[in-house]
Image (cartoon, helix red, strand yellow):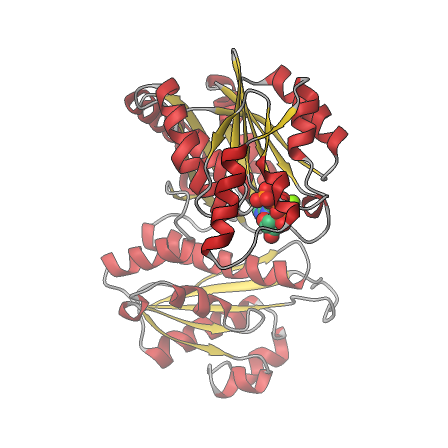
Length: 422
Ligand code: ATP
Ligand code: MG
């Protein structure tokens, strides 16, 4: 079964309101294996609603319309739907009585304008709304069905649970669903992820694999339909293949798991600890590590050493290194990492120093130049210099991601240069 959602409300096509109803509806549809063909937000405009409904009925067997069932003159969803279906609107005395009773219960007389909510599309089934005044409607059109729901999210939710879901379950049988899973990759550009997973697009269905990018973090989502066993097998097969193609860049096969959670889990299992010395990230790495409950088991503490004097007095960076190499250098990053390790007596120390911008560029060190170091109690300090893209916020966010991924790779015994190969 395929569905279309029409979210009605002039505020939804303005600059400050998001249509969240369609997200809630889509989650319910997917859980029952119903595909969303498309969705649209429309203003409270009768002819626009009628036009969109005609198109929706040409594309899908199920059309879910929400919003615009209120009592005010701008609510014209019933009128638009009736016009598209060539049906009339009829007054329903039972709804009118229920409305009057509802107002009486709260000690009011029903305002005249609410009578409008007793208007029903000819032949429609009325869906009682216990959370508000506007009842929902279901119009059966042979092979096709249109549901009308109020726009208030809590009212919509109540009507969906009481009416749409039972109706759908009768028609979608078994444990059919559309299920999504995903893996996440750190510090590989979206275009490179795309290139590497290219074979999977051919081996599976192109539209079942989606790449979603945010700074220094790319998610690859996979989607499967069918009964539980079929879905699981297909999702596993897709994730396994993507895992082969992306290799060690994959930090989790759980869509909701963050890099700091993965790193925290590894530190905990290996009973090792970390401390940080941060300059351009201003404590962001420490902040991310401590977002995870239980991080006190492995995070010792962090220094925010923004001024050179603080790098010297707090992190133990040598004034000579600063003078000779500059604050943004592999050498200073290394000494920051080693300083954190020594100060906090941890197993690992992370050091970060860079130019987040927009100012601060020096010859040979453009904005986005960031030096990272990972010192370990046992073994040499690893250091890398990268040029990160984007504005100040992106450089800082990306830097925290690189630092955490350095630690992840080290804990797993992977090589550090993630960009060059698997
Ligand atoms: P109803 O059909 O329930 O009478 P309405 O459209 O007449 O709804 P409005 O006053 O326009 O009532 O909307 C009620 C509230 O619900 C508003 O805050 C509105 O922004 C919100 N709302 C309407 N549609 C959506 C949507 N698609 N997603 C999220 N919020 C919505
Ligand atoms: Mg509205």
